[in-house]
Image (tube, rainbow, N blue to C red; front, top):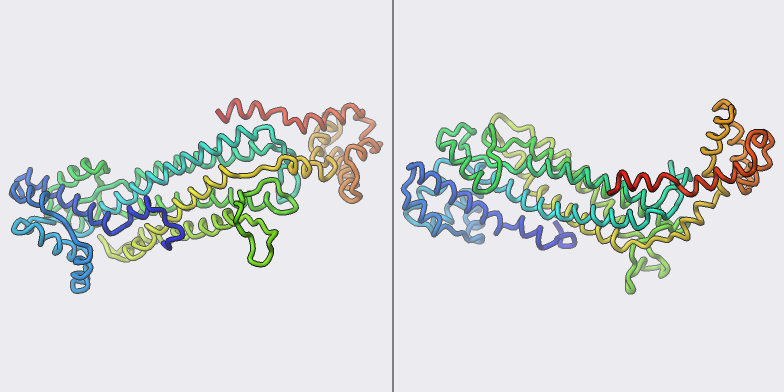
Length: 430
């Protein structure tokens, strides 16, 4: 991932230093359990634990000759261990180390992402309650529909990200797996209890049947969940972008004192943060198809998944972390223009009341079709001639036979009050 989107805490997890540190811990635990079982001398396990260390530059130099990263790592660490190194990586295969390490890196990253999600959910709840009664127009197809409140709009995202958190917790469990089963997963050269021992020490789940690798349906689920999360991030970003349009301007991203919106037009205040999130979401979702394709491998294993994961996993997780942090910043610093919300609400002269007027006519005995026709006639006159909807309704003779002026006023007032907002918040947003 390019430095622009890196955060040190998440980048460190995907560093070579951390990867080889995890590899070394796994190898030491394998030796420790094998010594307990009497497979290798206890002295050898102690020496492996005490002396095992690595040099990244040396590993890279050795790999140029071996063309195999794990062999290069083993050869490098063995030099530090000495005579007991013959028991280092004893009875296991490369995937036992690589895949279990991959599980730990994914889980370590997930803890950071989960923390970001918790903060996001908290911020959405705070803002939702703050703007609970801030009335604005609701839109469908981009067209004015009926009133909503900005708080209720935010609460939709609050619950969506809560669902994302639930899915993500399941995904973390799905990939928190240890597999130490030797070549082709038969435990022929390694006792099955070693896998359980290492899993317990690393707080991972012991894999059921691993073939030679951890089955990639687990990882496909994980990255698919990130794909859904990315779409939720983009949904919020697109909402901000639409509401920040000049002719709408109901909300606006924070714009700092020295910030520039354009190299040519000094007046510009663009929703660049939200636009950036739209692009990053596309990138995160791009991992879903490769992760699904990685499920399909030849027989007990091949390495067609490996090259994809080396690139995809760190970059997608770093991008997800960045996106959540950026989204949190947008929400915390969001400017809300309630005056513009009220102005836009009344832009069409009260047309957002058509539904409730129609329902009242139905209750007075009209068929739905006739009630719809009567209200639509007044609505189209309002729309086409830029008239006040309330005044047009008062002059509709068909409607006035059934509804008095005070009835129409009451309907319009009730609609603008959004009488069930309190019920929604009391029963849903606690």
